[in-house]
Image (cartoon, rainbow, N blue to C red; front, top):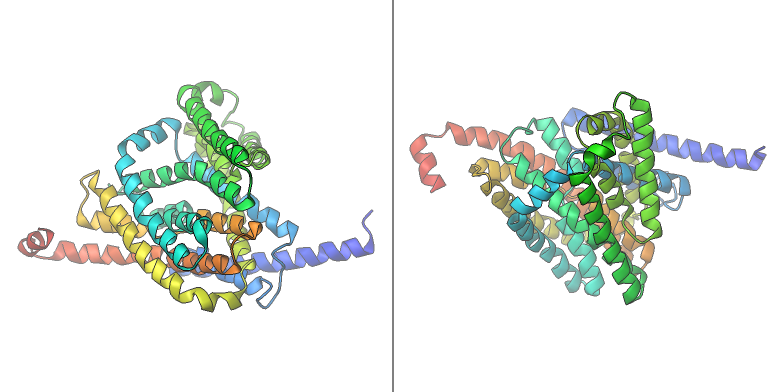
Length: 402
């Protein structure tokens, strides 16, 4: 039987968490009315509810932290459900040059700024990852909102996202090893484990998907939901025990499922994903003291401007692979500009390790806030620009294209 003191503690947790969800719900409605991504508003809510804000929910609260971790697991699980193993292998072959351009162009600005700020090579590796990885969650939402799914440049953009997620598989264990000061042998084991796991999952997904699907039935959606969600959480937990990224583990679980099974799982998990992902983004804001943001605002803005530009260059390379138009390249660049869940995951690893100063987390919060807002806005801006471009006289259009 719970004691009176325990009952009071539960009531306090429920009240704080309920207020957080109500606040996030209001912000989601505002974002929907404005036709923008709710992610930056969730980050603002975290700043508002955090220890430096008005309400003061502690970021160390185990309940909220657990819900936030479930959010990132679901984000990556549903991202994995979007692809098949065969598509992933074909993507890696077709878009390898674009993926290399993406990696070099977008990680270097973060690496350079970290070195300038005196954070060393660990800080450079961490901030380079933050600026490199685009937000799959925000991009998929913008594609749905703007009905760009059938655009020719959308497929190459998705291919770039898949390659970025594959890079994260060895990157996150390497970063974790460096942040925790683990020995060289242990670090090599962690990285090799990550690569072996990715390889095994790809082989199963490509060669054995039919046999694997016999274990699941889309005709029993409740059972399928429990099996898939449970498998993703268990895989994430097991990954954490062996110093592998829980988020990437959830992505690989989703990769194993294709066809009708994946569609039913996506349909069932979508609403839960949206709720938990909102808590995840807000939790990142909870851990940031708003008083730290003014000091990093100028470098965050400069970094955002540079890396939005490099993502537009990446978008041009991606659109070129399908002989896309200039407007297609602009749309691809606008989509890729937003950073989100993986950037926040990297900052979370840094925050737990205490290797880098608190300014790192504040810089990432400001940077994600800027790019997560700018990406959807830029995507909406290029549409009327594309219409204006199409209305121009053909002779002028040809001269400008040349």
